Image 1 (cartoon, rainbow, N blue to C red):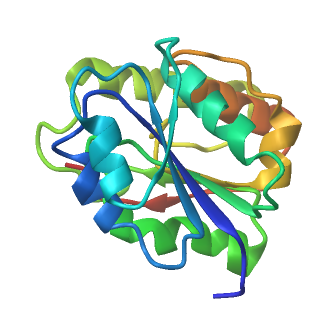
Image 2 (spheres, rainbow, N blue to C red):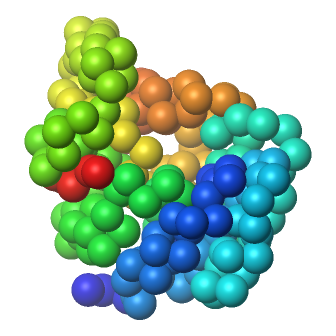
Length: 197
């Protein structure tokens, strides 16, 4: 792979059991891993530090708030690609090369790891999550002609493209905000199949 500086941002809350697995499965080509603890009451912070992550804390509960904290931290560190990943080990971090490859090799701005076209374990997503996913991606396709199949958290985006999106959502609308803004700004986007447990 062409040399790019890659940072991973992982929002986490009470993930002391899973975070070591997540961190150990992240490929060696990643330059820095940021775990943003979002108010854990267990040993998530210690587990993340013990496994080599930079740990930040964000007391305001919310997926987007945690992601924004990570973005603020890495703002002046000259990263080329930002990868977002959940801390519960539902994604497969070892598939990160698949997620970043279209940015590196084909100059895409954003890549969504799609659980819908990938290998999803039976029962890994609740029916309401599947419906919400379908509805949101259908509306994005209807209004902006972007053919997303998933709003999954495992995604990669060029640093410069992420900054242009001016993300603001501090809760669970974070992923849909990113995809709608990417479509509105006509970013070059694609999806790759990823596994999900």
